[in-house]
Image (cartoon, rainbow over all chains, first blue to last red; front, side, top):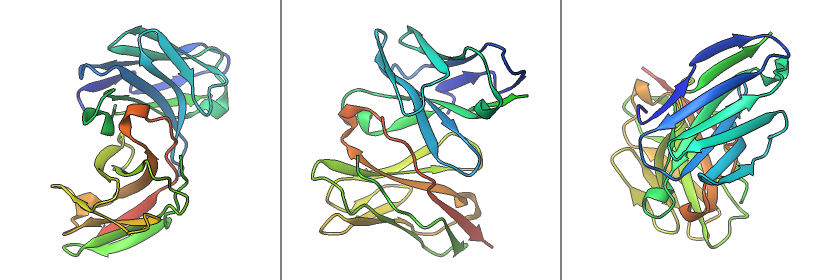
Amino acid sequence: DADVTQTPRNRITKTGKRIMLECSQTKGHDRMYWYRQDPGLGLRLIYYSFDVKDINKGEISDGYSVSRQAQAKFSLSLESAIPNQTALYFCATSDSTPPGSYEQYFGPGTRLTVT
Amino acid sequence: DAKTTQPPSMDCAEGRAANLPCNHSTISGNEYVYWYRQIHSQGPQYIIHGLKNNETNEMASLIITEDRKSSTLILPHATLRDTAVYYCIVRVDGTGGFKTIFGAGTRLFVKA
């Protein structure tokens, strides 16, 4: 969905390096999310933010940090990348009130490989 | 949020209806049933959601049993482009935000 963009789309990095994944949205949504997906598995929530001053941990936040720079931008950082953080990462947004709040919009994903 | 159980995979012939089941026996009265799909490694795409009544939109129909313990997503005329992983999720209404994880889903193969 072009309304949610992620950069980079692919990244290969070495163990111990710091890396940032960026997400931008033009939908005007308050809520943004970061998920990771491992091969053959569903998506697991890393962090979420319901507005610019709100940051919450998800199911698997260890080893990750986030920054909500603006309503439209939500970045995910790996402070010291390790191989088991190799995965497909998705950013998503949603509105805060019905009926828009019933749907979540996902970005195209960032494929991260840590060697 | 309630857990869901879905078959890991299903086949469907092109042009036929695809019926994807989902069990959610512990669903609460204020939890909605949502369906998303993920084509290849793209971001998941919203399909439909419902609370009690059956719902239909341009993509699919959602049938929820009277006791709400299970539901079925119906793609009325499956095409090869409907080959994807389909996720059934139950959660409180959208005002709470999407804090749930997506399970492994059902991998639907539509065959010519």
